[in-house]
Image (cartoon, rainbow, N blue to C red; front, side, top):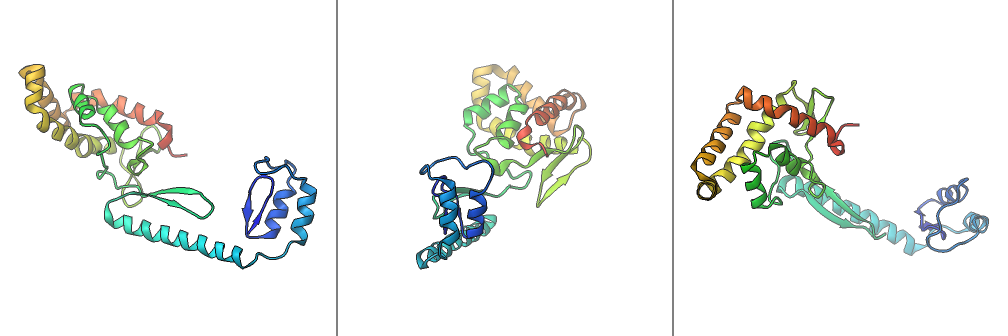
Length: 235
């Protein structure tokens, strides 16, 4: 392995190191401030990597193969993130995007979900499920343009105009909110009264039936939110 003594850049090819040292803009000094011309001369006459260097290369490739094997295991196990450290102390998080409709929500506190239900916080739920940077495996929605959304299901797909949001409301938001409702029904009646409880129940049913008034109220805000969440906007 050939290494730049100034910045720590590593390569298995001597020519790549010489090219790195010959760039117009010098690399940033991280390790030691060494004259570039001196390093170019040393690199030009340096010998091939010794056996220890070759073993390091083999070990590095071995670690990468193991990481890929683990990733294949993950695809069938339901776990979507693993962490791998290679021999150059680089830590890499490998994750697989889950199919649309199969997002994991274990990371969202139950009280937060309950508040979403009480406040009819569909937009906040959308953000927490699909746009949490700590859970990139759930990032399976993105904008094609202002009218169309792409969703991930065994690859990126584009749905008919408005269909993805409709699908998400019924198959994504509703099951989550309905589960929260059933777990907190008695608590809601005790704290908020039977009238508020009935109001929430009617609202959930309206989503399920895709009630035109309810959906019309929600859709602009949902689309606006998705459009502004540029982390998942297709470049």
